[in-house]
Each structure stands twice: as structure tokens, then as C-alpha cells.
Image 1 (cartoon, rainbow, N blue to C red):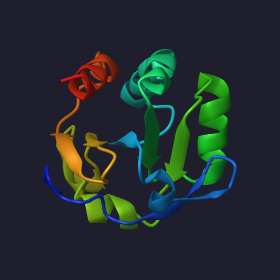
Image 2: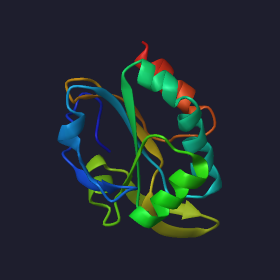
Image 3: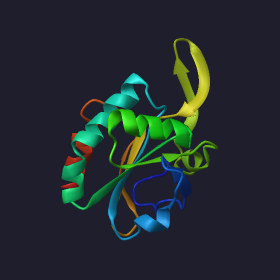
Length: 152
């Protein structure tokens, strides 16, 4: 997993509307990059909902939110519509960005092992440096935890 103090890896992925979003477009601003396993699952829905509810607080503090999963653009569009998600969701179908951040790896669930996204969050400053990493995120309360970390 990428460490605190490192530069954000360059990336470009499609958002829920099929528009290409590049990491360079976020340069010069503070932002959150959070990786989540899958649209419409209980934990991911909780996490997305909490970031949505606190989105105005993030924007007021000058912070953008970017969520990334392996789901495709169509799934993200449905998820955004159903959950009223106001921030950017990016489709990393090929897991290239997940691998750059080091969140793609072996997972265990109900006795079986498989490859997947390990729920993680990275906080980025205006210089494009990661200043805080949350490697094993619990969805409930995470948005508030992230907002507080930016205020320290």
C-alpha cells in the first residue's frame, strides 16, 4: 500500500457519466480518494451515504471526494442516482489504479479467499502528497473521521 508522504500515483478513469477524470485535474486542491469493494453492498452503501451527507462540509473546507471501485460506469451511474451521490465515482474495471495505490489484494470471506479491493482511504494535500492513510476502513463514521483528519 502506498505510504504517507508519497505523491499520488497518476491516474485517469471514467466517472459515472463516462467522462474521463485525470489526477492532474485535482492538482492544487485537497481531496479524498477512497477505495471501496462494490456498489450497492451494505458497507459501501453506508460509506457512500455518509460521504454524501457530509459533502457540503467537505466542499466548504475546499476538499473534493473521489470514490473508486471495480464497478463499471453503468453501475456507478445507478449507484449515484439511487444514493444521491454528489461527488466523483470512478470506474477502475481493470484494477490498474487499485494496484497503483496497493489496495488490490487477497481477501477472505466466509472461509474462501479471493482477490478484491481492500477498503482504504487516502487524504491528499494541495501539493499532491498523501498525508494520511486509512488502511482498514470501517464504513460507519468514516466520513467524519476523514473530515477531522483534514482539520488537524
